[in-house]
Amino acid sequence: MPEAEKTPYYITTAINYPNGRPHIGHAYEGIAADVIARFQRLQGREVRFQTGTDEHGLKMARKAEEQGRTARELADEMSGYFHEMDAKLNISFDRFIRTVEPDHHRASQAIWQRMADAGDLYLDRYEGWYSVRDEAYYDESELKEGEGGEKLSPQDTPVEWTVEESWFFRLSKYQEPLLELLKSPGFLEPASRRNEMIAFVEQGLRDLSVSRTSFDWGVKVPGSDNHVMYVWVDALTNYLTGLGFPDETENMAKFWPADLHLIGKDIVRFHTIYWPAFLMSAKLPVPKKVFGHGFLLARGGEKMSKSLGNVIDPLELAETFGVDTLRYFLMREVAFGKDGTYSPEAIVERSNGELGNAFGNLAQRTLGFMAKNLDGNLPAIHGHTDADNALFQTLDTAIAKDIPQAFEQLALQQAVELWLQAVFACNAYIDAAAPWALRKTDPERMETVLATLYICIAQLAVAIQPVIPTSAGKLLDMLGVGEELRTYEAIRSHWYSPLAESDFQIEKPTPLFPRLELPAEVEE
Ligand code: ME8
Image (cartoon, rainbow, N blue to C red; front, side):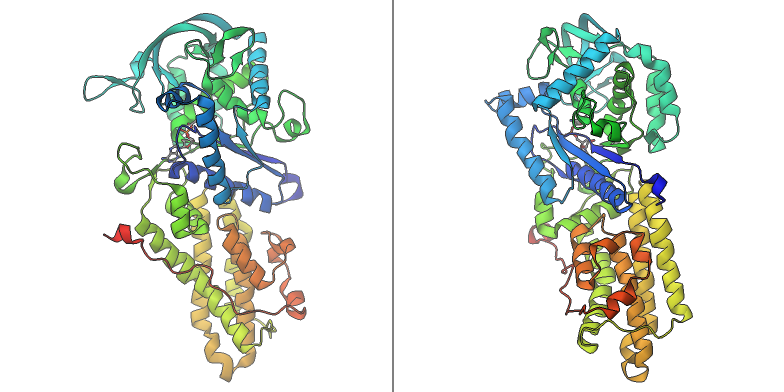
């Protein structure tokens, strides 16, 4: 990446409701964001990555009540599981924010004050429908009828009639600038989500109720002690809190506006309508991009829910199949932006076939042969053939151009596919060049073939680091590729000869991706 483009990069995930333990959908979002963050770091950008938990609101208050404990106790326990999940899945966040933290209350009150100073807040009475599960207000016209005749939100959650005194935000005032923003290329992706939001704004925006008086689990409204902020006002503000807002910090100057809010498709309205409107009111720049990824569905395409008993614990999956395997599977299996399904069979198949047979074996065979037959020395190059140069060309295009471009465009599945194509090209080369057969007949050619493979395997390992950082790192250690070479740029240059001439010795490789079997309970 040219120096001029190496600007700081701020990426965030949604902050999760800790009203229960994390599920695979939460893990999916965290992993995808981590892949992007790691990719941007490899491109030489200074990255800030924030995730965390969204702990206020009626949903948390009700869940705690059901369990006979305080909302804070529930939040403390459950937020811990989210933190643990992130750590186990190797999610490289810079800050894990909890909305109960004092700096977050301060930031939320500051943005509120700015909206008040802009004349955008007024006191009135709210009468309308509210879904506690979605923490969202709905217009009568948006509701559906359930099987028993009850009213349901567009997301199929129950709604309740709510009447209370409330502060309102003049959302209607921002109709035109919001339309302009939604129509601007690149702000909301994938583009398929754009039309729905544009239609919602075009049909006319109503002012938004932004405080509640019927419970007190939230951030206090400045000057209105009996009101707490509507949970989405404080939740969205987390993206600023983490940078030190309202202080004019170095991080604010460097990282705001955010480069990417990565969120799921169900909360696009909050991020592309409410959030930019709050920011416009507070006279702050709006985020550069919001990406609404798809949902991960359980086997058979069912929505995960506690009542169906098909909620998947990501840590159990990571335990059973391995962290990198799970990360690889999720990025490989689901077209980023679309819904996808998970099944243990598919994980096992992808892991054994792609990570194990295609990539792992390539490294294993090559390094194992070198350790055994060359006494661990790196072979010399005795002039490359057309076949070698063709392979270098394929790898170079993948690593210098196609794969980074796909990551940059958030085509994460495509990036992995391109990588896999490059792995296949190496496998085709090894089959055709058959270095083992050359040992007796043409040892010099054998050396050149092995050196060619060595260079390509190192490039493949570097390229896939964002997705499988631990395994790629282990392989690069085995290959003796130093930290300074582990970027898309550095691994292209002539690093092989100095390494071959150094004291570095290849040792018998340890398997990177042990063969997986389906767990017994799945086979039944
Ligand atoms: O919405 N597959 O929290 P949340 C993929 N606190 N992604 C999924 C998913 C699934 N099955 N289920 C949920 C909230 N998600 C708010 C966010 S941000 C200021 C506040 C995604 O715990 C979901 O779309 O319900 C969202 O991006 C994230 O997980 C957290 O969902």
